[in-house]
Length: 188
Image 1 (cartoon, rainbow, N blue to C red):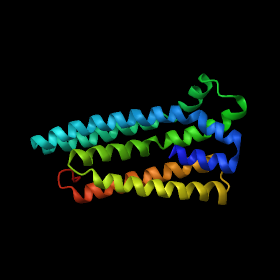
Image 2 (tube, rainbow, N blue to C red):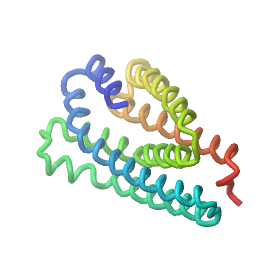
Image 3 (cartoon, rainbow, N blue to C red):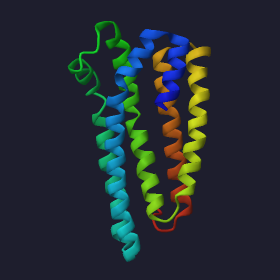
């Protein structure tokens, strides 16, 4: 997602916008990878309960892991500006960098949700379906980047919103699919 955002922003919005997105890359990646780590850990627990046939514990692990992941995703938003200031992002870039990172970090919940459900689905034996949803979301991200940045002229925020929306759509699609198809984790 970030590579596509960088390409579109650099080509259509110029060097300062490209630098603003670039200044946030490693930090947003840090938040994303922490969410991925939480998701992988949750997947291990879910796989153990699934393998042991402990349905009640499995449902509890799915719910609790979703809650922890959501809380972590929400905490990343207010951290954007202080972190970028700590990294001494230049004053002329800080506004765009903060805007992009806050939107992207707000979307961390979508990244966390996708990785969480991906880990759950893999733990239950389905690794193909989440990959299909991710591929479709990646293509949609490229199209929405162009639509929001080039056509609607939303600027750097448009690239961030395109990413967040496609990540959320991927997560929601996987969650709906998983809960509709899997008998192990149907909500009651």
